[in-house]
Image (cartoon, rainbow, N blue to C red; front, side, top):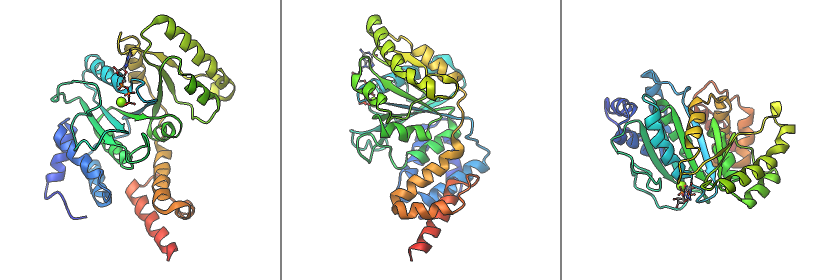
Length: 317
Ligand SMILES: Nc1nc2c(ncn2[C@@H]2O[C@H](COP(=O)(O)OP(=O)(O)OP(=O)(O)O)[C@@H](O)[C@H]2O)c(=O)[nH]1
Ligand SMILES: [Mg+2]
């Protein structure tokens, strides 16, 4: 990669982005979304760390669910309440959009049903076209999230889907929600079949009506009873009943998120993401080799990436 940023330009972009300036942040993200971002990533993350930014206290929150369950609407309402309930916290939303075309680096996720002041520095939106099948995580999502973690206290990742996608998002989330609507019989069947990784919490959205809400809550919590036998401590995940229409339950949901102190999965995260990248790039053959190398999570993603790459290429010859 040629050097895209001369002199102090990168440092200035980082400092401006850290202040919540949207254009510099969008510019950094666009660089991370290039297929050949390796050199840039190396320089970027080194520079950020040398400037003293830390990312370990940021919380990543996955919002997954069936199309149209109201994920974007919920995140819109959460954003609004976030601004009034907190004074010094910052949040970002990354929406992985299965259907829209490339939004040309738009500053506001265009499908987030939201109109917040563009100048609001405590909130940042980004929509990423999914380059895989329906709702699949974008290959660059992980690096974008890594960057955002240095600047935002909370990062919400919205993806469509249930099953595999839900699992993909939960791999990089500290806290994952499954958003459903009342009487989603298919979804409940799906859960029963045990394929799905259990999210940290459920949201039943569109609970505009009390009776429907109660019935659905009952169905879902009964379905989840089986978890008592298999989960540590016999706990079942919390279920939030929300309505964007009546604003019901959203305050409680936000409260839960703000107070959450999730058990970080970061130590496994790099390994998981490295293996995912190797599998895409080199298939099972690469994976086998990579598993023999000491990919200690103490190193940065880029260091492990380049080590794995050279080992795999050596063995290919
Ligand atoms: N009645 C009612 N409608 C809602 C509620 N939340 C969202 N909607 C509506 O449901 C539709 C889909 O909402 P979105 O927020 O786009 O849903 P989504 O899950 O982000 O959809 P995709 O990103 O396409 O998967 C919109 O027409 C919303 O206005 C709610 O609580 N009650
Ligand atoms: Mg949406």
